[in-house]
Image 1: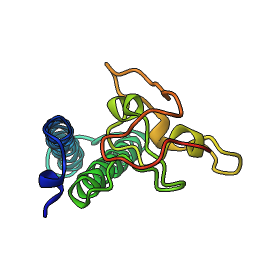
Image 2: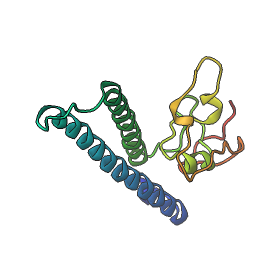
Image 3: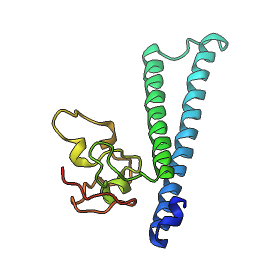
Image 4: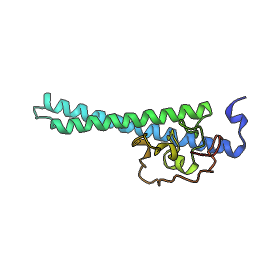
Length: 154
C-alpha cells in the first residue's frame, strides 16, 4: 500500500500541497542557477572575447559562492522531495519527533526540529534562515507534523 493510500484525504491534500511547494521551489532555484551560471560565463567571455577586462575577480568569486549556496539550497529541496516520497517528510532527522507544521511552512526543506537545531553543540544551521515572504515559527512541542511521529520532547 502506497503512502498516499495510507493517508486520510486531508493528509493527502497536505502532502500534495507540500509537494507542489517543493516542486515550485526546485523550478525557481533551477532557473536562478541557470541565470547565475550564464552571468558567470558571460563575464568570462567579456574578458576574453569582448576585448573588455571582464568582471573583477572579487565579483566573480562572490558570484561563484552565490552559485554554490543556491546549489546547496536546491540539493536540500531535492532531499525534502525524497523524504516526502519515502514517507518520512516532517520527521526530525536528529530526534525522530514531528517537525512543527509552522516550521515546515516557513522552511519546507527543514530536516530538524527547532529544538535539535539550536541544541548545544550543533552550531548555526543554514536551514534556520527564512525566505522572503515567510515567517519563522518554531511552533509548540505538541504540534503534529504532516507524516506523524511523536511530538517533540527534546
